[in-house]
Length: 533
Image 1 (cartoon, rainbow, N blue to C red):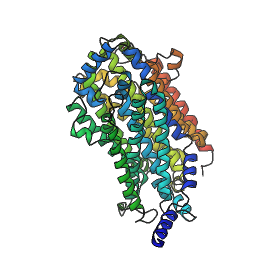
Image 2 (image 1 turned 30 degrees about the vertical axis):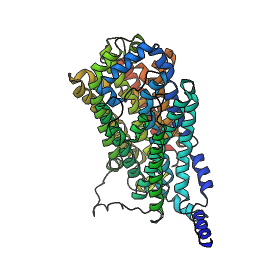
Image 3 (image 1 turned 180 degrees about the horizontal axis):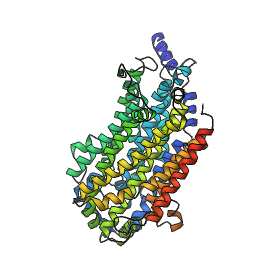
Image 4 (image 1 turned 45 degrees about the vertical axis):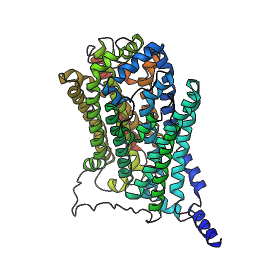
């Protein structure tokens, strides 16, 4: 009995301070996590009304199910439709993407409060107090669990009108996917010495899960492929929310999260703070980074290459869906009107291409914000001070990162256009132009981030809020038939709807000039203010 008490006491000491660290993590994430949860929940909860407007009768929904069942490309992109109810269509339409968004939120939370803290040196300071060895990891996982539980609660309550059982299953499935990738991030954070690498590897695992599910769903129309069952995203669709639920699938989420959490705890107890099981490879004996721009490229090249590959593949996929998508909505007046609001009235195929290139432009805005805010991260971490101590001015330092941000956005949109041309099988010129015309709006969002970082560095993360608001306006606004005054709040709402419409240079040049003015103002403010501590 005494031995058991000693072991229990030892375990409790290893978790000492978990509550305090959890409260601190939730306080630090008091803005970002609610935004993640709210955006994801809004995306899910806006869908039933949209689908009801599009497919108001059982006959229309049955026809949609039959069309998707016979279209392998659409099944690969979104998944199979398992029932004709509005709830089942909601789970089909947004399930994969809501789960991926929740997984991204969870992995970022865990890496931020584990490996990021160790890399910055703050974890060593915290560990000098009355804090158990495994308390930081526990607090990080609990912070992710709180976010996933909030998402599950909002989704369950919001979709209860479509069926209480299906809403509960769907909410728990989304939370389950989030916790699987939260615990996966916890394992990777023990293996790697870099927070950037930990995020990249876990995000790559999420991408692999999407590819496995897509490959499986393209082969079968009911989610029964072994490849689908290898993916946590496939488990969500096989939970069959609103379609005769399989509650036992939730055990797969619980088992995967428990096993990965156990591995993470075991690894955390066998390494020193700041160390890893996969140490960073030593650099060359002589330095190769002779300029601030070269350093910026070295820091951001992984993100640029990853976004480039993703946009090219997205272009190929959407290009291959163009003819099928046009056929899918040709007989549905409401769906056709949504595509016309998003992509213009020049023809259904051109409207689909314009709407899809516009969506990629909205996603590219997230890239440019992330790249610009690398300036903020370098400054707040203190890494910029040794750089500026050399013969490097602030503007040269900033220019290197901004060249990657704005030039990188041009690169990924170019590759998206080429991917569309490959997938669609037509000449590249029109669709490439449709992708490139999105750049002035993308640059305006990036310029807002530059202005916030230069003039009010404490508010720099608010650039994410701007990008997310623009994303919601462009994505949800047309489906909800939002008034023109709301759509015009987004810079993307002023662009010509290529490839169907005629090119209009006035808004393109106007947005480009606005972006240049905002960047210049931000750089002037950066040059005049003190560095953030």
